[in-house]
Each structure stands twice: as C-alpha cells, then as structure tokens.
Image 1 (cartoon, rainbow, N blue to C red):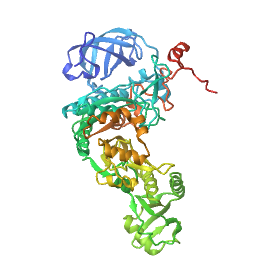
Image 2: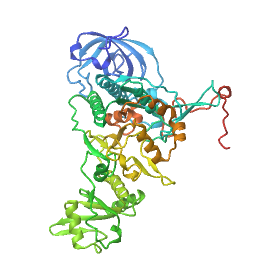
Image 3: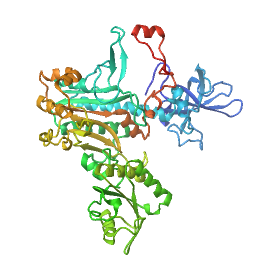
Image 4: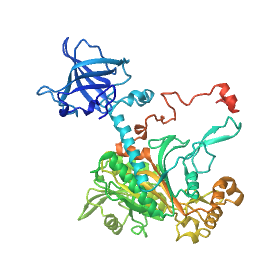
Length: 581
C-alpha cells in the first residue's frame, strides 16, 4: 500500500477485496472512451498499472492529463472483465475528478504495443519512461541494486565511496578529463573504475570493500557499452580466487532471484579455464545455452594432401540440420569466415552415414579415410553441416566461435540463464613492436603460482589469476588476485619493459602505499547495466538506464554535449581550437 495525503493507494493495487471501498487515486489518463453524453470510461495509469474509472461524460480529461480521482470500487458488470489487466475484475465508479495538470498530446503513444523511433524516445525520455516496459525495467534495476547491496553487506563487505575526481591512470580505457579552475592548466579525470582506490583501501585495512560505483569511459558506444555505467565493485584481503568467486556468485544469484522470483531456474554456475573455453566455444565469453561446440580435426588431416587443411590447427563446428542450407547461405558463411581472419571455410553436408554420403566442393580431393574420420570425430548426423576452418589455433577458434553464434545462438528470451566463470586467462597478450609482452590485464594481476618461474623465459605461456563472469555470452565483469609482493611486481614490470623510474611515474602513489604493508588481496567488478539488461530480456543496455546516450554519445533530451560560454572557458584557462583547424 502506497497511501499519501493525495491518494489512498495506487492504481494497480486495487482488487476484489476493495469492492465497496472509497478510494482516492492519482495518475495519468491512459485512454478515454466516450459512451454517450453522460458516460465515459477513463483508464487511469500510474507505475503500478491501470484501473478503469467510470466518469460523467461532461468531465473534460484527455490523454496524459494528470488527475486525481475519488470514487467507489465495484465489480465490473458481468461479461466485461478484462483478463489482460491485473485490475480487470473491478472498476471505480461515482467518480469525482480533479485535474492536477493538463498536457499536450505526447509525441508517441505511451503504450508498449506501439513502437517509436529511438531518437524520438530519447528526446522525450520523460514520456518514454511512463511506458509499462520502461517502468518494469527501471524497477527491476532497483531490485537488482538492492539485492546486490544486501548480499554484500550480509557477507561482511563495507560500503565505501571513492572519489569521482581522480588522477589520470594508465588502465587502458580513455578517460574523461575535468579542467581545474583553481589550478589552471591542470586536470582531474573521471575514474574509469575505482581499481587503484580500492587497492589502497586494502592497504588501509578495510578488509572487505564494496561499492555500487559510477564509472566513466570515453569509448565508442555499442549495445552493451555507455559512457557512464554502474558496477558492483568489490575487493577483499586475505582471500584467494575461489573466495572472490563465491562472494560474487552469491551476490549475482541473489540479484537474479530478486529480479525474477525465488523460483527462477538457474543451473549451477560452471567454470571453464580460458583455454577450455576457447577450445570448446571459440570465445572467452561462452554462451552455454546451446550445445554446438568446436571439434578438433587436426589429427584427421595430419597427413592430408589438401592444401586448404595444411595448417597448425584444423577445427570445425557441426550445425544441426545445416545440410538444408542453399549455396547463397553457404557462400555467406564462407565470406563471414574470411572477414573474421580465416583464409577460407570448407563445408561438408552429411547426407547419410550408412552408406556414408557427404557432399562438398572438396569431394574430389579428400580421401575416403579422411571423409570417414571427419564424420566419425565430429559425430555429425545425417542432415548436419560440418564447417571447417584451418589456421593457427587462435584464429581457428575465434572464427568458429563467431560462426557458432551466427548459426545456433538462441534469442535473448530463449534458453534461460546460464552463468559461467572463465579462469586462468593469459598473463600477456602478444608482443609489441619491440618484442616485449603486452599485459592482457592491468600490470597488478598476480600470475598463476605454477607459472611464476616462466616470467623471464616464456612469458606468453604464463597464466594469470584473472577471472571473468559470463552470462549468456555477455561478459558481466572481470577480476583478479592482485600483486602485493615487490619481487613479483618487479618481474612483471621487467617483462613489460617498465623501468623503475617509469613505474614510479605511472604508479608511484600505489607502489608507495604497498611499501607500508599490503595484504594479499583480490577483487571483481560486475557490470550492473549488462546484468539488468539480460534479466530484463533486453538487447541494449540503454533500455535499462533512465537517461542514456545515443550510440554517437549525444543526449537528444538535453542537447549535450554543448559548447561552454567564453567566460567559463576563461575561468578554466582553456581555449577551444576550431573544428576545422
């Protein structure tokens, strides 16, 4: 019950138990239907739903006017129930209407059944937010945030707010810059994450920290990325990787239940190493809702005379029922494989297995033995399509991983929820132009204890203690156990070619803090926007953010970004270079 001085309850709360009661309701006029001169039906809407009100036809109220209605709840006449409404068995009669605010006709219907142009929706977001879908998304987000906060507190984590005005940090993503009025020519940045701040909290003895943190990154936008985003940020001392994963799993599953109900079916959270995820799914963000997995055929074509298969790695996927694909569809798959970095893609249609009949442009070139082994190892059935890529291991995996999604991925509303952990990411990701390893994560990620001895001799084979949480093929977040020992930190800096002076310049305040006693610690960050979008069944995080930006980074509602007045620029000590200069 949400009674206030103006209303006794909300529209969607009225039911059979209220029949005969006097009610006072407030909301927007969703629809008006006139039935003669002395009778009108008005659907009154607020965030809880819609209730039908019976008015005198002479009362003037129009769509989206804000009104207050007093009346008596009664059962609807027999045969007029509306099963599509939670309040469909009752209506409010004997109504007195007070107009609280008149309204112009909205730029688009406030109705989920009618689609509207996205730019128009964002320009009038305050109208768009009235729609039931958006109301549901925003309130689902609130439940998720509350559940995350409650779970963290129940696990002994202390909520701490970190600064929004920070110092530039070399963490990878481009930062938004804030000029200082008091210190002309000097700048703050808006933090892309509280990463270094939360590590300093561990040095400060906070032990278990969390924050629903606002983060900002000046990156190109896409369906799962905005300039501004929210993450459940956490860090803990005297823990190992399993401790962090347990804490995050508990919080995320609590949020899932809060969003969708306690009876929601969420299978156990699987764990894959990075190598296993790449081998089986072709990606470190595996969508495990469907069963197409990569098959290794390197041994099948080890002695082949077909040049197309002369490569260090030959892998394939089996597309169930894919033998019905026409030539244009198959050509499209081949072109997609090439666009992803493969030299080509070979395909085989399995017509039957007894006797073995396989159709392919390579029919004349592969041997009977290779043909039999191909079908046997891939476990293809009649009617299936085998798509094969031969290349280096990384390329073969990633190309087939993309084709796996293109040919078999369920829709956003299908297949349920499948969380998984991906662990043991590579410590380094390739070499730079000087032949030095490049950090796959930030340089404070602890290497796997079994691989520390390889830091100098074989750095590209070193695994890290970094881990990701994935939901339905979306990366929800990343974390790692941090380096707290100076000797290991020096080994990492040496491998990256970072000398003492450069390390002090780039990370001095953190390294200085570590010298005063840093506990073993690790942490994680969950992307709240992505989590909410998936729980809401949305394909774009804009649909679960109250006031998002467009893909070009603009805000049509406020016309941001905008130029600053000359006086403001002067106070900041800034001069704008003309765009055409």
